[in-house]
Image 1 (cartoon, rainbow, N blue to C red):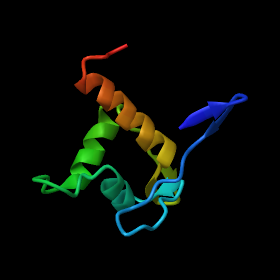
Image 2 (cartoon, rainbow, N blue to C red):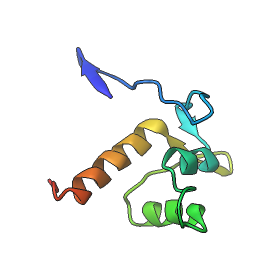
Image 3 (cartoon, rainbow, N blue to C red):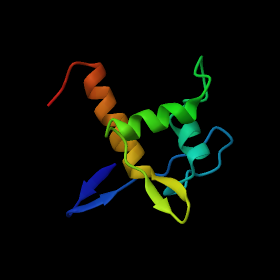
Image 4 (cartoon, rainbow, N blue to C red):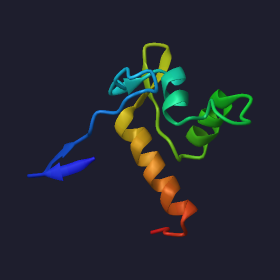
Length: 89
């Protein structure tokens, strides 16, 4: 994410199959984007719910479904990186 002339630009991201990541992701896409589907996590959707309930990640309701803004997922990752590295501000 870069800012120029008070406009924030989000670089295009791609899934592993080279499909561009949309700006509004389904729960399944958010799980893949955050790579919660990799490793030992048996129920990655529970991890998303945990992050929402803790106020670490915000979702957007569209109709009856929750969606995740790509910018929100990137902000979440940035915050988690700071916490992981002891750079809490």
